[in-house]
Image (tube, rainbow, N blue to C red; front, side):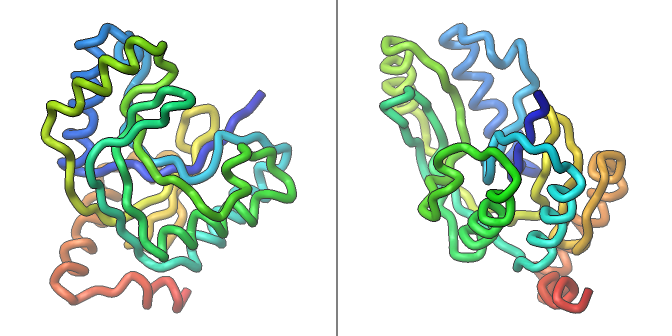
Amino acid sequence: MTHYLIEIRFQGQAKEDVKKLISKIDNKFNLGYFRQHRAIPHISLVGPFTTNNEVRLIRDFKKVCGNRAFAFFKVKGFGFFKDNRVIFIKIKSNPKLDDLRWELSQRLQPYCSLRPFDYEEKFHFHATLALDLDKEIYKQIKNYVATLNEPEFKQFVIRVTLLKNSRILREYDFLQCRTLNREQALSAEGWKRSEKLLQLFFQGKYNPDCQSSNK
């Protein structure tokens, strides 16, 4: 069965720092996940989910993202889901990101099989560090991360990624204000273009929201 997921991927130094943290926990507690899978630090927005209408999914993904403003989020410390024993990084969202995630969920509900939490407007944004843990390992990791310096930084949502069976199907770039296919999303030149626009944004010389609204 084909599975889809919509996520935000960490970029730049934040990506490397979170990846190192995942690897550190994985190696220290011999979880084996990092060695078996290519860890890509991310925040899930919708899914995993299934659908029989990929064409409509891509169209809706593009439309929703294209009508949304350039957003950011803040990382602040560690968190824990006791019931299913998950260790994660806390994500403090903002109204722009909340609206993006909720509109995506609402748009997909009629023809996609979503997870129960995707049908709820209130959402706990997080970036997973370790999951599917047994009770003892969960307790050990929880005590371990309490000894670490808590991550704290701000990051802009440059792109949102639509995955198909863990591979990039489409990405929406909020700085370039366009949807990218897999080849474009992985292009080094494309990232350089986005990074240049980000610098112009920081300098007050570029407003991606205006560009998007004029499409």
